[in-house]
Amino acid sequence: MSTTAPAKGVTGSILTSATEGSANTANAPFGHALVRAAEKNPRIVGLTADLGKYTDIHVFAEKFPTRFFQMGMAEQSLVGCACGLARTGFVPFATTYAVFATRRAYDFIAIGAALGRANVKIIAGLPGLTTGYGGTHQGIEDLALMRSVPNLTVIDPCDATEVAQATTAIAEHDGPVYMRLLRGQVPVFLDEKTHRFEIGKARLLLDGADVAIISTGLMTGRALEAAKDLAASGVRAAVLHVATIKPFDTAAVGALLARVPRVVTAENHVVTGGLGSAVADLAVAEGLPIKLRKVGIPDCFCESGSLPWLAKHYKMTAADIATSAHDVLK
Amino acid sequence: MSTLTSAPDVAAIRQRAHTMRRHVLHMAEIVGQGYVGQGLGIADLLAVMYFSELRFDPANLKWADRDRFTLSIGHYAIGLYAALAEAGIIPLGELDTYGADGSRLEMSAPETTPGVELTGGSLGHGLTQAVGMALGLRLDGKSARVFNLLSDGECQEGSTWEAAMAGAHHKLDNLFAFIDCNNQQADGAPSRVMGIEPIDKKWEAFGWHTQRVNGNDPAAILHALAAAKAAPGRPHAIVLDTLMGRGVPLFEQREKNHFIRVSPEEWTIARSQLEEAK
Ligand SMILES: Cc1ncc(C[n+]2csc(CCOP(=O)(O)OP(=O)(O)O)c2C)c(N)n1
Image 1: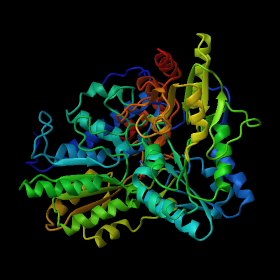
Image 2: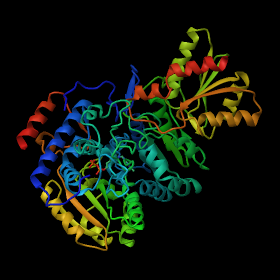
Image 3: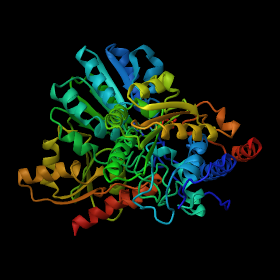
Image 4: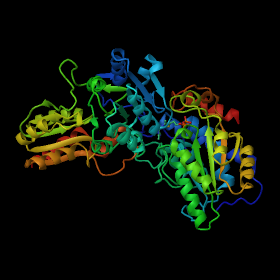
């Protein structure tokens, strides 16, 4: 066999989150925020399914070993057990990857947690294209699945600031929550002094009259970047960040759609059933005449690859958002 | 087509396992990290399977009467690719593309790769599908067998035991499960994460003809396979005690070795250790 030089573009970042060249990052924002919440509330407990090191809950486990339960690689048992803890008055945070939480333990989330509004927090790693692994590990349709479960709150934070704030908020919130996790070294672009995450509230991060970019999760960082590029070519873009997918902030989204009817949605998720669909539903229900382009993962299982390659391959970059904005303005 | 006609040549199998370990190091070095420990640890089993036990035709991978080898643990792909290349199912040179953007040799094996029977990696699927394959082959009157490779971590998934129950209930003696007990999973040793022992007793209690052997000894694996085939009426479990990183002391001794990160200068050491250990 030949001894070739390392191939280019290998999936080196396979098990770490993409920092997207961000100058400013924070380490394990979820783990540290959970520790702060748990210092205040002794009823908070943590669980994982053999992914403690990979979902940042190891920070909590080291600090509160007696309040942490390792459930082994068994996601149905993980969620079911969390529901049981909730029924005895605890506030369980259960972590695994998005694919295993939603695909493997869906029934347990729907019936165990959501139906009776058990106070369970499901924290789901590797959302969308944040892993180089293929179809088995990329949680590309979890928002669609979770958004359709009654009683569930669904959150997709955009950076480390928001991951931390959302963790605090859901610890205080009484009811079942599904939150997508950005783990490891997570980019920071929201100012913790001025940004205020609130369950159910969208935030207008930038105003502009030409095109409305409505985004969620890590795509909000790319939306802000796209808005900068658009400004350079004379297009004024608004960026509305919708961190809570459910309950959906119909007031804020509806007001923006009415004011700026050229719309681009951007989500780290398949374009079916997620944020783009929620926006389209609302526009139809309100009779708002919008023109919409959805940026997101196409209707397919994705390949393996490095994160930058995947983002380009599936047209998920800031440049792709800008292209869609120009397109929707035609 | 390779068929088992004469007594297996253990020395030849050991040589194949050694060559496969070289391939594993080569692939891992290109990526710079990964599931090296698993690939090295499972090479002996894969050498037995692909060079003694499995009936398959590299020129006709869809041959309906072939034995099925199903890799439940998709992340062991690095080991399987080494075997598939040695067996002539994928070109040797293609191993250079392991883990590269756009490559067929993804780090977790997908069924779109030649020779990969099902998409594992979401752990706990493999045995359920292996049961279905064994039922299907039996219904068609075929003598082909199904061999599923599981991990110790996978024994924590409920679906594994649902399938184990079904295999015994339907008396699938054309079904074989290898359980790779390398004493490691993502968060550490199973005994600390979620105890599974005594794992052989569990398979036995579920109605499987069960044996436990040194999974790094090809002769012991061959012996267990012969004993399994002589026990009709039940599915067969062979628990393999293996050493992660087997053949490369540098990796054998590494503590957190589920996913190894390796510095560039360590590869030279690893390669020479492998040749010395031979
Ligand atoms: C259903 C499922 N849950 C979690 C994971 C994440 N995961 C990947 S490998 C792994 C460890 C599994 O244990 P094992 O196969 O025994 O690990 P190894 O021997 O490779 O260290 C985990 C938890 C997964 N792939 N599938």
